[in-house]
Length: 90
Image (tube, rainbow, N blue to C red; front, side, top):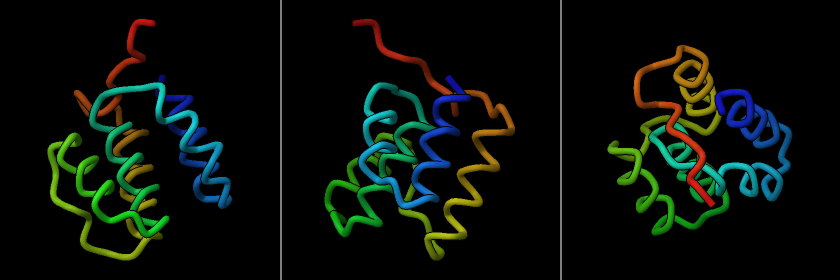
């Protein structure tokens, strides 16, 4: 799962919002919710972004989009407990 969330993060960094969103929608957990929040924030959908920040159990990120991408990458690659989540059963 970490690999796919990092792939979604890479796509977000490359401006491939739809591809990143498609990946992140398949997962739950704090990392997926945070990345989902980030995508909606960058798209200008603040109310949806706030929903996903709440799902990630965090306040909206205070910083620019590049700082948030860096922080997201740090968390996703650190293996922080609970950050990865899992793919829901289908």
